[in-house]
Length: 292
Image 1: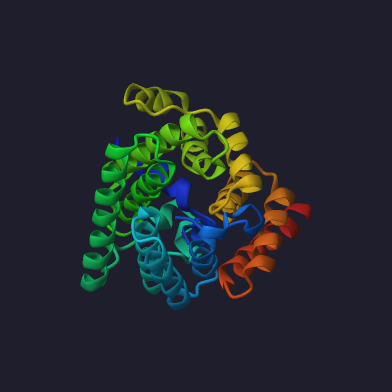
Image 2: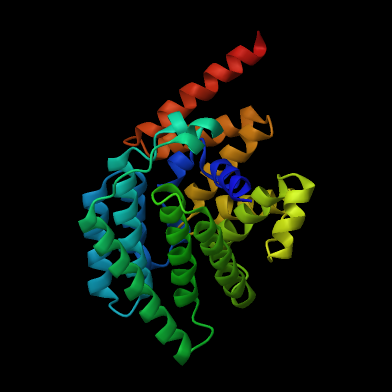
């Protein structure tokens, strides 16, 4: 079962998860509420690998909206992706290959990072749950908890190599997202968590899907792609993240021209992130080889 979980996570994070990780980013500015401009700018900078600028924007958001748990979870996202970048976790040489992923060495995280990351997530959880006690339909709190669980899943899978906890955190993220969507169906960012979970599990062999479904994990490849497309087209904060995940899915489904279109757009939108350029070049090489 542990081998199955490792393959599950290797499939989730190969190719541009890579690019992806980097759990969450860039808002579609036209859809952004004015009060969220600093938060959105921070995510944009983070996805462009400007970690210092991103943290400055998140700090400003916290000053402007000190009771918003999304500010704390954004800080945690910035810390995690900066650490991924330092460790080389976002590089594709092992994320694009199952065997390399499974046999990779466990990276050594910065102890200072772990303390700050864990503190930011705990503060996020405390703030968000307190807001939900006051108002169970607080969508900002539900969104913060969705991202919080997703970040915990990413750290457990890609740094700690703890696949069972990672899968559990991923399930929690999807559950928070479903609660959010029940209240605010047009919160398209939430479809990232539900869509990727459905797609990944839906691609597994039937016996594995059955085992996971016993544990409450629902898989449906087609529904997953539909939900990721909703997030990619209409998400306020996670549109690029959804596009990265779609690029992964399209590459796996041998829809490489669709994957390429997504990578071209991401490269144009985030010119300082070399990962998009590398993955685009790799994909172009595969397409040329396919034509021979």
